[in-house]
Amino acid sequence: MKPFHCIVYVLTNEAMPGFIKVGTTKKPILKRMKELYSTGVPVPFECHYAAIVDESKNVERRIHRAFEKLRINKNREFFEIDPEAAADIIRLVEIEDATPQEDFVETPDDTDAIKKLEKRAERFDFKMVGIEKETVLHFKHDDQITCSVIDNHRVRFLNDEMSLSAAALAALKQRGFHWKSAQGAQYWTHNGQTLVELRQQIENED
Image 1: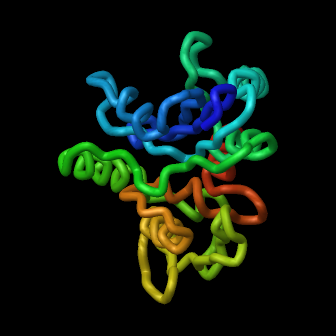
Image 2: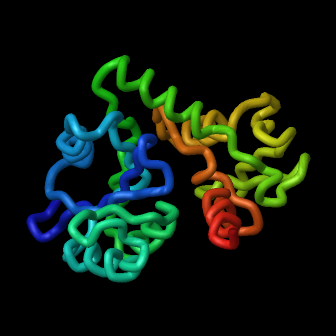
């Protein structure tokens, strides 16, 4: 990476559903994620997207400015938005995709903790957002990859019944990403919107 380049990253955390962290680093992204995994965070961060960019601080500032109203604390880099919204801005100026193909997990206990949180948050309610049985969902990184809804909480992907998160991990694996966890509702779309966005719209209407 050239001296005037940095990595801009979008991180998620199973312990903070609905929130993302946007920041920059000169270090390898996995090293930065390890630094952020402190005693104040119950489970490791997951890298939703990262890219090498020029003048990265300017890119970071523009993302922060664009989503200022959704910032949780003006002194922290956390926002209550779909991570793909931030990733889309980064893609406009990226030089190279730097998203790690392996996620950062230090110990088996970390994996178990992530799985517990993932299971707790997994039961996405399709009825709540008006999605019916047999509806086809599209993987947000590749519209040709699809799954179909089989009941209010599960989908069929590659002829197997599974959770949204399991389907997301299987789709990511097809694209070369060997992650141990993924927030399923962030990776599947309906009518051009992620399931997270659809749920947020319903919640905001309430």
